[in-house]
Amino acid sequence: MTNFTESDERIELRRQVSKLAKGYGREWFVERARAGEKTTELWLEIAKAGYLGINIPEEYGGGGGGIGDVAAVCEELAAQGCPLLMMVVSPAICGTVIARYGTEEQKQRWLPGICDGTATMAFAITEPDAGTNSHNITTTARRDGDEWVLKGQKIYISGVDEAENVLVVARTQDAGTGKLKPCLFVVPTDSTGFEFTAIPMEIVSPEKQFQVFIDDVRLPADALVGDEDGGLVQLFAGLNPERIMAASFSTGLARHALEKASAYAKERTVFKAPIGSHQAVAHPLAMAHIENELARLMTQKASALVDAGDDLAAGEAANMAKYAAAEAAVHAVDAAVQTHGGNGITQEYGMAGLLVAARAGRIAPVSREMILNFVAMHSLGLPKSY
Ligand SMILES: Cc1cc2nc3c(=O)[nH]c(=O)nc-3n(C[C@H](O)[C@H](O)[C@H](O)COP(=O)(O)OP(=O)(O)OC[C@H]3O[C@@H](n4cnc5c(N)ncnc54)[C@H](O)[C@@H]3O)c2cc1C
Image (tube, helix red, strand yellow):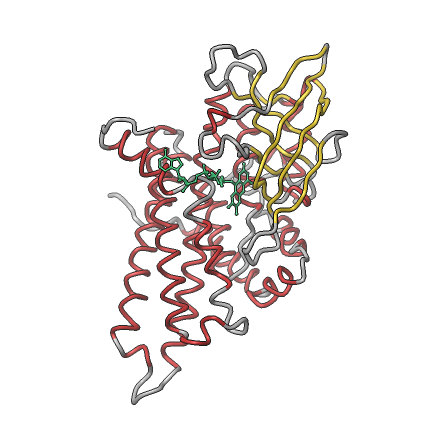
């Protein structure tokens, strides 16, 4: 029989993470973010408990689980108001790519630090001029003897200031055909010629986004992860986990907003009964909850497909999950703000602070329009529109 519930083990994992995150809570998280501080204690505690690298093979310090496990961790943290954006990047994208395509020596060098939280890895593909069209990236990698020399620029790269390394998507200089031939390089953030500046963003988050300048950064031969000619497949290995994690980030945020709004709607009375008894207040919350549960189900399906090794089917499900989750989060947070009335935009109640974070889910890591393009073309067979 098809089973639509998670395993007892996964449910217990969710319970444990939720309990741990509750010990920190939204207030603590927001205070840190507003003070420009990091949430390193939570990051390291999650790591120490074995949750950060739960998707990474045990022989490299991980938990030997799947993407569904690390996505559950990500969702439960967000549901307690403590989302850790770098989980999307470090263990899920970089960890997956290195575990799958790295040499034995590379896995031993980078994965343990990703798992124990001491060597976070950022991920950089987006460029100012290429934007959504990553086929147009111009960061180049040129061979010089035994070394690689990287040159280019990246934008909106999360967490560079707290990362030891960045997994940079570059292209080999003489690709010639004009077709994307991406290669993945691990670049230490303290490399000579590697500079970054923070982009002032409106998100209330301890993780910042950066513009990155890569000016003739010299790297040893073994900074290249995987095969120089197998780049696209290798890159895709990280993209399904990325979408699943982004979806989980959004469904967690939506749960957080809906829980707060429901509690408030039960308490607050301005006419005869609590405001939650008015359908105008209750229905938007109920609709957002339904949307969110559907998004969670699709996220679990996408995770199960990735963990079963069906990358193609997972691609469709992961894109759909990411789209649905971002929409659910935007609707949930908007309804939660409205439920709180004026309190909805005070710092004390913390609802408005979620607006930009939820909205960002429609833009990053892949925009809703590009997902709609993907579904129109691949699921419905419509002509390519771009
Ligand atoms: C909070 C945050 C964190 C991020 N972290 C990272 C990170 O760690 N690493 C990284 O590499 N990147 C990161 N990004 C970048 C992110 O992936 C990009 O912002 C995103 O892919 C969109 O690219 P763009 O901003 O250049 O928008 P553009 O490409 O300029 O697009 C602008 C708008 O036009 C639409 N559009 C463009 N082309 C089409 C088309 N063909 N059809 C329909 N609509 C179209 C887009 O959907 C979008 O709405 C982050 C972004 C944010 C906001």
